[in-house]
Amino acid sequence: MPDKTSKVTLREVTAQSVRQICALTVDSTQQDFVAPNAVSIAQAYFCDKAWFRAVYADDTPVGFAMLEEDTDKPEYFLWRFMIASECQRYGYGRAALALLIDHVKTRPMATEFFTSVVEGDGGPLAFYQKSGFVLTGEYEDDEAILRIAL
Image (cartoon, rainbow, N blue to C red):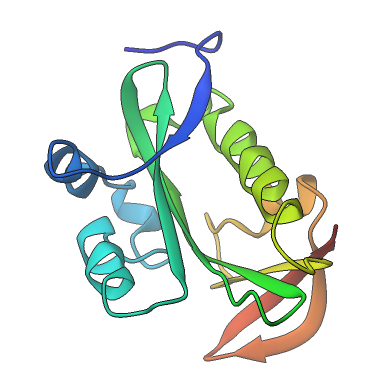
């Protein structure tokens, strides 16, 4: 098992890694806040604007992230993000989110990065706020929208 000193990277999901990535799950108390990785990967294959990666700590898969990238717009959207329950509290989520923000900054015209959350006890709202995202006051499909300027 990786530890707090492990290097966090974003890697393509491959034929060799897809089963491991799909097997990653959040705690039962968090399941209402993020879709299973298998659903996210399936959706990505039918959306030409989806960009997705596995989150690794050293050589161990620990999470999953998916962006909606429309290079014709200055706004990018973090569509899915999860760190497996047994891998939480090691800083992997914060490190992976920083890598995602850095990635978005390299994209054409990128000026804003958005995400949305289901609000509730145990939800990810505080995590995003600690990373610099702010609530916009807007909602989509009962999810609160957050934004960070790039």
